[in-house]
Length: 364
Image 1 (cartoon, rainbow, N blue to C red):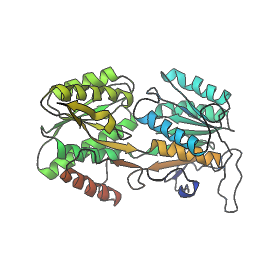
Image 2: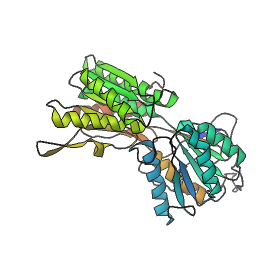
Image 3: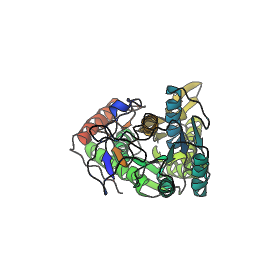
Image 4: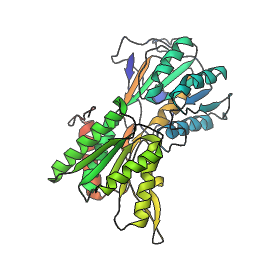
């Protein structure tokens, strides 16, 4: 499989800005099925002007990963003047893992030419269906799969999470923070590893000790579990919680809102995948305030929009593995409610990661 670098958040899906060249991999990719080649041998891909998302269990309203993907596909539809439906774009929502294959089948039967699997859990289903349907373009987000008609897109989540750890260590007043993960595995492990390393590095710089409370919910779509875990962490003295748990994180925001509206001490949440500042709004004594400290950003919607456009333009880069992080401008951290000292520390660390001075761990 070929590996290539993508673009940053500021890039709208323009075919001219995505350079997908081979730079090593597992066995090497080839042109996508039905593609032709230009004079320099680059694949032009099959032309597919319809696209569908197969969501993970969080759904398109999870205010996080799946929602970002859906917003990207909607932006592609608007840009190309196509509407929601089988002649344009749509989504198929998965309530549980047993829905993945049936949802892909529905998308195939509806005639969608490009199908996106949103989340690493869909990898086996995407790989299986891509092998059986070589004339359809497939994308797997957050994992990799071999196939001439598959594009694999992964993110260096640990780099953005490291920045969140720095921000947390500079912002905590109790010197106790929390991390809530969705389901244990390689992907969320990157968030955990980066955050823990960032907290440690920030605390060392500030010459203090910061404790991290760490727990997984075992689910990406269980707000009740997220709220229960957050309640426990805040009760133990944590004043900041970073969640990487999809829809489960909605419960973290619910608990933080309840505490901030009724209590005297401020607690914070660090959002994930998209700017979750809107989730942190609340009213206190007639004043509008916000408890979203910052959010780690992940260009899921951007990659969906770009690859849908590439497919529509006949330039779908089947067989490629795109992997991107801070250097590519495709993961990041918002300024949010950070102090000037915290923002300056994050800025310096971000540059150090880009320059290769800091090697962020990917495993806890």
